[in-house]
Structures are given as C-alpha cells and as structure tokens.
Amino acid sequence: PQRHAADLIVFGGTGDLSMRKLIPALYHCDRDGRLADETRIIAMSRGGLTDADFRGKVDSEVRPALHGDDDEGWQRFLRRLHHVSLDVGSSDRGGWSALTHLLAGYEDRDRVFYLASPPMTFGPFCREAHEAGLVTPRSRVVLEKPLGRDLVSAQAINDEVGEIFDERQIFRIDHYLGKETVQNLLVLRFANAFLEPVWNSLWIDHVQITVAETVGTPGRRGYYDHAGALRDMVQNHLLQLLCLVAMEPPSRNDRESIRDEKVKVLQSLRPIVGSEVDRFAVRGQYTAGEGVPGYLDEPASTPTTDISHRVETYAAIRAEVKNWRWAGVPFYLRTGKRLPDRRSEIVIQFKDVPHAIFPGAAPNRLVLRLQPSEGIHLLLMAKEPGAGEVTLRPVPLSLSFAETFQSRVPDAYERLLMDVLAGNPTLFMRRDEVEAAWRWIDPIIENWEGSESLPEPYPAGTAGPAGAHELLARSGRTWHEEE
Ligand code: BG6
Image (cartoon, rainbow, N blue to C red; front, side, top):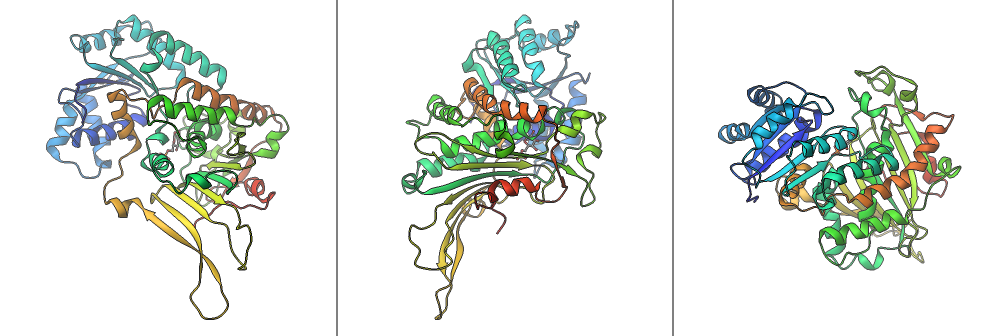
C-alpha cells in the first residue's frame, strides 16, 4: 500500500486519457486501499470547472463504466477530486495562483505532475510550474507518449523538461510496460530455466509481435494525422515489447539493470534506410468496410488534408537485432486499426526439427497472448490417436491467467500510477531509450513522408494490406493467426 499522502496533479485532467484510464485506475487503487487517506487528485484543464462540476462529470461519465463500485468508497473517492483551470502558455497566471493556493502547506508531500497532454506542452508546463515555485524536491513528472514526433523534437522536450526535473524525477510512461502479461514475459524468461538455453538464433526461427485493434480513430484525427501507426504504436509499445523479448538477462530486477539491457537492444537494431524501407516496411490505411467509414471519412473535428491521405493506420516491419544472440532472426512487427480482431501477442517460432522422421511436423510456436484472454500457449506436435499411420497435429499446452489465478487483471495504469507514487521508474522509459527508439524509427518515417506513393488501402474489418503478408511470404513464412 502507498503510505505517504500525495498530490497528483493531472494536466489534461478532463481529457480522454484521464477520463477513460487514469481516473478509473486511481479509483481501483483507492478501493484496494492503496491511496493514503489524504491523497488528492487535482485535474487541470482549460475547462473552467469548479470542484463540484468536475466531481459531477466524473460521477456521470466514469462511474457507469466501472465494474462494481461501492457507494461509500465512490463518494470517498469523489472527495479526493479537485479541478483547477489552467491554460499553459497564456499570460493569465490565475490557474497557477489557484494551484499554488491549493498546494500551500503541502510541500513535504509527494507531488506528481502527470502530463496527459500533447508533447509540445511538456516543456512550457514544467517551466511555468517551476516559475510558480511548485516544483519541490519531492516532485515527479510523468510524460505521456508520444514523446515528440522525431528524435530532434524528443531531444528538445527532454532538454526542456530536464532543465526543471532531474532524470530520476522524470517518468516517461508506456502503458504497455504496465500490462500484467508484459511483466509476466520477464518472469517467464528470467524465473524459469528451461527457456533460456533455446532463446537464441540457434533455436528460434523468427519472432512476431502483433498489436491488432478493431477500433478506428473516430474523433482523433487531429492527433492521428500527425502521428500514424509508427509514432503512435511502433516507436513505443511494439519496440518495448521487442526489447523485453530480445534483452539479455539483467543482473538485478531494478531500475537501471533492466533499462540498461533494453537500451542495448534498441541500439542493436539494424537501421532500415533508403531503398530498404520499401523492402522491410509496409504501411496501409483503412478504407470503408463492414459498415464503418474509411479513415478519411471518419467523423473528426478537423477536416482531412493532404496529410490525412498519407497517414498509415497500419504498419508492418521486418526488424533485426544485430547481436550475438539474435543475428539472422527476423523480428516481424505489425499493428493496425480496424482489423478483424483485437489481439495483441508475441509469437516465438522455433526452427524445424534438425532431422524429421515423421512427415507433417510443423515448428513449435510459443504464443504469449497479451490481450484479450491473457495467457501462454506452447504449440507442440502430438500424434493423433489411432492405430493406423502416424498423423501429427499441433496441440496447445495452455496457461490461461484468468483461470489459473482467478483474480481481476488490473489495468496497466493502476500498476504504473502506483509505481510513480512509490518513486519506482523501472517500468518507465529512460531518456536514452526513447531517443534510441526514435533514431531507428526516423528514417522509416522520413522515407514514407517523402515518398510519392500512398499507404496501401485495406477495407476496414480485413487483415491489413497485402504487402504485410508478402513481407513474410518472401521468406516462406506466415503470420500467426487465431487457431
Ligand atoms: C495508445 C494509442 O497508446 O494505445 C492508441 O495512442 C491505442 O491509438 C492504444 O489504441 C492501445 O492500447 P491498449 O491498451 O488498448 O492495447
């Protein structure tokens, strides 16, 4: 349990992320007794709301989406909430005065500034908080992704934030690292002995990392036009998953050991540049299908522009980690919106048996299912019962987390918010990690943005552009699909 009282200040506090993820996560932490009694949650936005307005908004918008709340606990949670109106970058200092007033006398508490706002506000927010005298030695700042839009902008933001906060006070969030199954990957690899000897290019043929979503981008075009799947998903979530699969065993489970190993993986990624981009990276954009509009016709608060036509809602990449363990093993990454199923998984495909005495043997696959139906499945070859000829069939050895542990799977944000309050940055990205990830992504984005061709269209509800299939088919491989 969290023992110290804290003030958690959420900038962008009435936005989508805050209302959909942060507030529910904080409620669940509170219900589990993990927030100190005096802990306060202070939302900041331009909204001009009073505390009562904000509590009413949370009551009507958040509560219905919660599974099982108790009235007394909910009312206690609502009393923790406050709202301060603030417009960063404006000459009106009223918001900062109001916040100063609210925080006066609480300088010895943990103070967390959670920036759930666009990256260009990170620097100005930190500077203004500092000018208002609100950055105490016990303060931390949480930066939501994407951190910038390329290496140069990420460095500029890191510099600006770094002028006010020490690196140890900066928590760059990637919520995939807080997912239960993602942490289980580390336990699977480093708390079991049998996998490590085969976890290398001698035994593994290739790795697939898939984050498939059924959602589109309704209402998000203003953001998504300037992001696209590479910046929104690959630079952070997919590369973090790749790091956890590929990293060397760390010597300790602590903040620097794990991050040191992850950054080495990012630095070992073979750059994909120039004409290689067309060979190793595929992009697509969904068009209308199955009764839903295409990306360009999605309801949005901003009109489509030339940029909208160029934005990828799907990306697939063949990556390579150039080190002793992984030389020659492709890591295929893919992610997209409006695909047939919501499914995130990591598939480790082993090599063929060195000498096949039975016809029909398929290589083993280890499937780590991140969501939904979290679990681990090892596909083994077995003999079908029968007295005739030996017939082989792949059968799964399966572990379902829900069945085995019979407990609620907490949302990633619950874990990560508690880590911020406890001052533990192990599951957050260090500056060098974020920058190494951009360094690898940048040439691909530059190539796409400078290219005359457009993303390959794929109808909503289908499995993505044909190019993604070809990316593997060229070397005789196929994407893992639902059994
Ligand atoms: C976010 C992206 O970081 O992750 C979204 O901005 C995406 O576009 C989301 O939908 C996916 O997260 P999850 O936890 O639902 O897999």
